[in-house]
Amino acid sequence: MIPASEPGFVSVVIPAKDEADNLAVIVPEILTAMAGRAFEVIVVDDGSTDGTGSLIARYKAEGKPVRHIRHELPCGQSAAVRSGMMAARGEIVATIDGDGQNDPAYIPQLVDALVSAGPAFGIAAGQRLKRTDGFAKKYASKFANGLRGAILKDKTRDTGCGLKAVRRDLFLKLPFFHGWHRYLPALALREGFDVTHVDVVDRSRMHGKSNYGIFDRGLQGILDLYGVWWLKRRIKRLPTVSEID
Image (cartoon, rainbow, N blue to C red; front, side):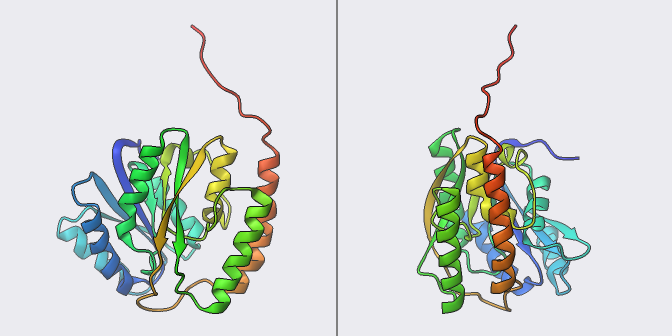
């Protein structure tokens, strides 16, 4: 059963596979950044085989507002983000990668930017500055972002940044597919919402290595890009709906 959204409440979703060492850093950072707000942290454990479960159990035993959503088998980042959003109680859902490269200090800024922008805006998207990735990954990302922006006109320089704040009622309207989380701005525009942005500074990965290959992601991204372009073309005008007494 999908929980009802709670007004003023924020859910922070972390998709993570074998990121226990990084979660040990970023979860306390999130708790500090969100202090004074009504919030929860949802770690979506995408079939991890490390100490992720015991780490989250410790936080829960300490009374921290941390939840553990687990996939029995790894299903990928898009599925993990979706599972977290489906389980979320928050009216606004913030997402952050589990590798430690995203700085949790930006989460309140994203949430506040979305609230300040007003109900016509569905997403506040982080835009990375001073990328810390290697040359090949940065070049591939720059090319993909340029191609995507030219085709989809999604008003977003960098959709690969894991830091985003999304209205949960918008999320529940969106189609799901593998790679979906990289096209949230375009999908929001498709539903008649606008997008606002917050510049963020990237950090280096703290522990471990990426679970996502450059070329696998790039080849899949071509199919995803075509699919999102097709979806956008299928909606010409959204109706304004009202009930007449």
